Length: 405
Image (tube, rainbow, N blue to C red; front, side, top):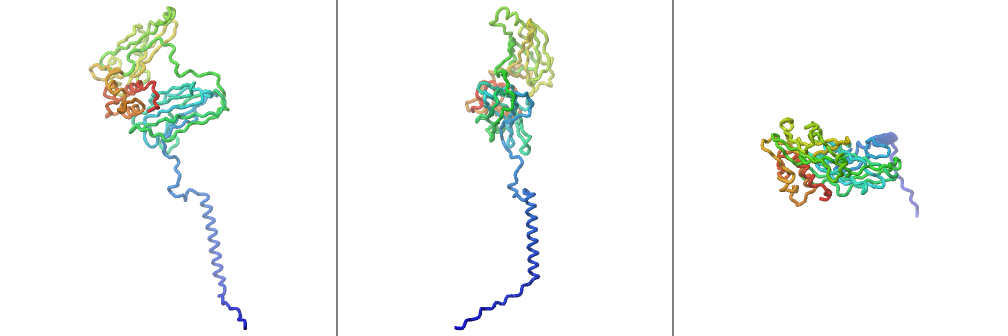
């Protein structure tokens, strides 16, 4: 059989000019791709989807412990308690801080913030516990989520260092931040603090106990002593006692105070002298209308009195009213003690749940100095919710573990 010749394929001639154009286009594409890649590398966020663009500061409701920039001694450590409430205003912050008592002890707790009404601020160095309950009256505290510096430093705690080791400060799991509008706990984030004390000087001295009181307790104010409301136009009887009971004859002689002076405090600041070097009779009648301008008679003004004297040995003794009292402009005499009026009816239970706790305190703060307020928040029935009512409710809560709602 005769073999057939292989088929012939007539291929078109190669167009050299077309080949050159394709090569140029490929080169241009490669150059453009490299340029785009370099630009994206240098500017990565410009081409991120809008939804994925990170915000600098996310809104948060938090309670944190942070190392403080406050300058302290070499054997001391300062810690800030920091609050943020970016979403809703808050009016009450309550927490218990736990620390290792073998390594640290509390020296002081700052309570000078003008925004804060302190309900409880105490510590126990033997147990390693700090209790902090602070109120921010209506409209409460609201911070700015777009700024890392817009936060409230609730207080600064100064510790003495006792042992060079790593320690942890923690926040109790029952810590609370209560919302001003409905008194609900809105705390979402809480963060303790880890510290390395190996670089600190170690203190050999102990700080004073939180329970220490004035050693010169020879004078005690009896009235006004908190919760009262007096008429501007009627005399107020200021009374006090001199403590000389259960003392030897020699001690009684040392405690003998023949003259006293009486001072008036307005909103916890010294306002002026009511009497100077008067006989220590245990009582003094003061007429507000004769020494105090009507400009100071309003719901924002609360008062305390201080009685001070000196014994024969040159030792001074003084006492300040335990709580604030107020003065009303009505012409009729008003004297509402803390055991009567609205307080007797409600017992401080403002929401009717048969318990007096932080929720009631938050409700009172929500109604603080409002023209239209919840009637039961006016504990002494004087027609306003102010420092007097706050002090009365605080007195009811004294000794309770406020963190247990």
